Each structure stands twice: as structure tokens, then as C-alpha cells.
Length: 281
Image 1 (cartoon, rainbow, N blue to C red):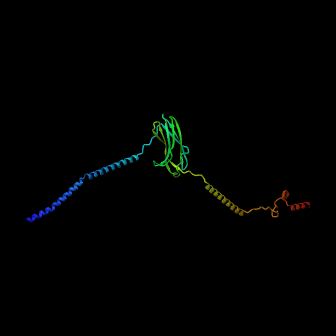
Image 2 (image 1 turned 60 degrees about the vertical axis):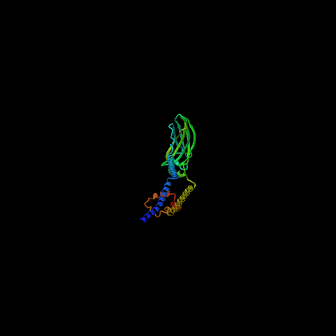
Image 3 (image 1 turned 60 degrees about the horizontal axis):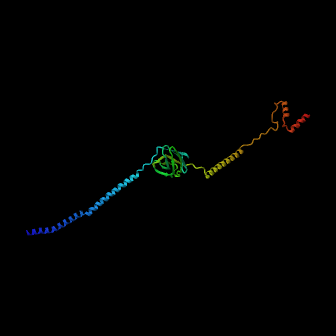
């Protein structure tokens, strides 16, 4: 009995310190978990995460605001505009295009015309600029029931030839209260053409050379044909009858023959001599 009790006592003495050490470690861990500094750090991290999320939301909202364009100024109902292209409705590349803009004030207040601008846009979406021309400052005041005319010119770029583009012409003006207005005078799709150039020196020389060569060939063919024709054609010489010995004139009356001999101027001298001799006999 004593041995069994001593064994249990020995085990208890060995296990009790180990239990105390384990309990102390668990308590220390719980104390560390409840450390106020650690809790403060966790709260700061959570606050930083919230601030970052707010900043991201603000950035997204600003981007959305930037993507939404401002409302463009509209045309005033008392302003009437017209346009005339003085160089024609065609738009040749690398050539000056001129047009006149007429502005009529149909209202009862003054209009201050500020500028006139033109640009080429992407034909599928006019918000994309292809070529933006310099705005023409006008700074002209148009009285009520008054009119004004403005001239503008631009030059389409050479690489744009042969393609369609959207041509936008805008007129900017203000009223007496300082309100800004903008009228789209021209807003259509046009095609930039490539103008045919005149004959240059090289082309003229080439044409002259070809014409001379053709003329030389025609002359040579004519000479060859004329030579061959002369060789083939023979000259026919008609020979008259030298004597009438081979001709049967027995059926002709003698009186007729005598009359023919007297009337013929081509009688040879020998025949005349014979005829004179026969007469003398």
C-alpha cells in the first residue's frame, strides 16, 4: 500500500509543475492577444483600408466625370448663318479651299462674333479629330437687324486625298449678357480629291518624240511604196501608123481619099513631092 501511495504522490509531484507551466503559457498567450497596442494596430490597418477604398471610389467618380463631355454651347434662335464655298464644292488635296460665312442678327440685342474654326473629323464618329485648322479670330459686333460676312480658308493635307472625312465648321459668338453660343455652319461628310496635274516638261518632250517617230515611220513607208509602184508600172507609149501599106483602104472611095490627103496637115515631104510629080505629069 505504501509503495502504491508513494508512486501516486511521486506522479502528482511531477505532473503538478508541468500543469502550472502550461497554465502560465496559456495565460500569457491570452494576455498577448488582449494587448492594447496590437488592437490599435489592427484598427489602424482597418481604417487605412477604408480610406483606400474611399480614394478609389473618388478616383472612379472623377474618371467618370471626365469621360462625360461638357454640354456644348448651342445656337441662338436670333442668329442666322449661311455658307458659300467660293472655290466650289470639291475639296482637292493640297489646294486652298475658301468659303464665306454670312451672319444675320434677327434679334434686339448685339452679338459679338468671336471666332470661326474648321476641322476634319473621323466620318464614323465626329468626336475624333483628324485635322484641326487654326481658329480665325473675328471679334466683330453685329447690331440688331444687322449682317456681317466673314472669309475663311484652309488647305487639306496631301495624304488625305481619295478618302472621306467629316467637315465641321463652327462659329462662336456671345450675347450682351456674356452667354456663349456656337453654330455648326457646316457638318457633313466630304471626299478629298486628288487634283490632276498639268503636263510637265518631260511629258511634253515624250509626246513630241512619239509624234516625230510616227511621222518618220509614215514617211519611210510612203517612200517604199512609191518605189515599188514605179518599178511595177510600165510606161505605155502609143505609136501612130507610119505607112498605110498594111491597111486595106480599097473599100474607101477615091474622092474621099483625095479629100483626106488634101486636108491632112501631117503629110510627109516625100509624099508631097510624089504628089506634085504626079500632078505635073
